[in-house]
Amino acid sequence: MKNDTEFLTPEEAAKYLRVNKRTIYRWVRDGKVPCRRAGKQWRFSKDELDRWSKKQAKAVR
Image (tube, rainbow, N blue to C red):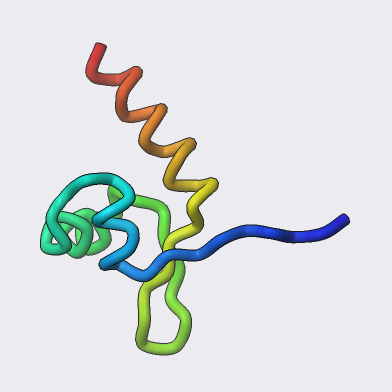
C-alpha cells in the first residue's frame, strides 16, 4: 500500500482553507486543527484538513 499523503506548510494550509495565516497559527495554538511538527516546522495533512473542515461545516449547520 502506497502512502501518498500530501503535507502542506502553514502558508499552503491557509490558502487551501481560505483563511489568514495567523488564523492557522491560532488554531494550532488552540489545538483546533490537525497538524504535526517536523522539527521546528508545522505540517498539515491535506486529507486530515479535508476531514476536519467537513466536520466543522457539519457542526455549524
